Length: 346
Image 1 (cartoon, helix red, strand yellow):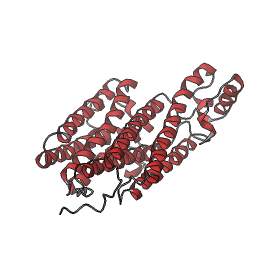
Image 2 (cartoon, rainbow, N blue to C red; image 1 turned 180 degrees about the vertical axis):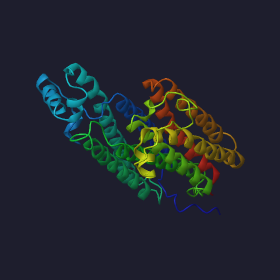
Image 3 (cartoon, rainbow, N blue to C red; image 1 turned 180 degrees about the horizontal axis):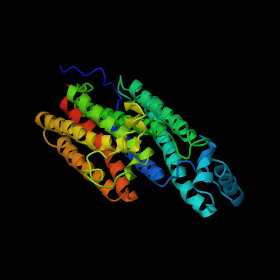
Image 4 (cartoon, rainbow, N blue to C red; image 1 turned 90 degrees about the horizontal axis):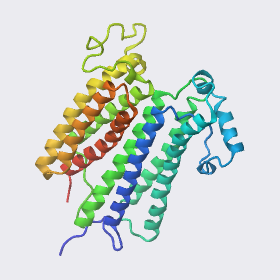
């Protein structure tokens, strides 16, 4: 008689849960895209208060719009950069930040409410409940991280801290990876009741670690506006690394994190190291599981490099830069899928 996995219990609906998680993953990708637009349009500081519940309702009349605009006029970004902005201009930047926060609330509800429903109906396979609750908690923490990021630009700075921006972006992508990995485990369980959660292979750890480090420097590049430093490729101006680009009075660590020229340099060339690791992961996935995730991963790696170069050459055109960030989210999905395929266990 076949042994049934301890994860599979009567009433469990792993396929239904997997579909739900793929929907949540799509919402997270949309959130990353809107977040990129918010950053590129300098809209992130337009809402100066954090109201997790009441903030879902936007200003509805002239008095409420004037109150929001008055709050914005009190922060350094308005006084030093946007002085003289009209109410119509403020509404334009308010829109993107509001949409970004609204999507965050939608994702929270799209995760929490179905999870509660599945739990009450005992449809969550054994061993998956803690993982889903952990992802929900991480999502709640992400909201707090987002506000922590915004507060860095409300009193002294005219923009948010690039370090906090990196934490915010990478946390979103970690959540995305966790959601996708769990969906893939549930799909495997739906196909075979003896399937156990896949383990992460060493090559998967290495490739994903390099990908996330590259994305951290991508966030630094965005937060410091380092993409504008040089719009040529492969050279930065006339040199591989421009003369005078290294701040002699700074430490190595500070140069690599705070110096826009050094940050752009690292982001340019670390991309090739991360790409090599991801292509190695794709090759391994193809040997173990055939085509599918492996081919998707290779295509997205090449597309990401092309979009990164195009972002530089176009002087950080918003459409190209947003595509670059959107493809980064898809790259996380493909890398997680390839890593999962490499070490699926039954």
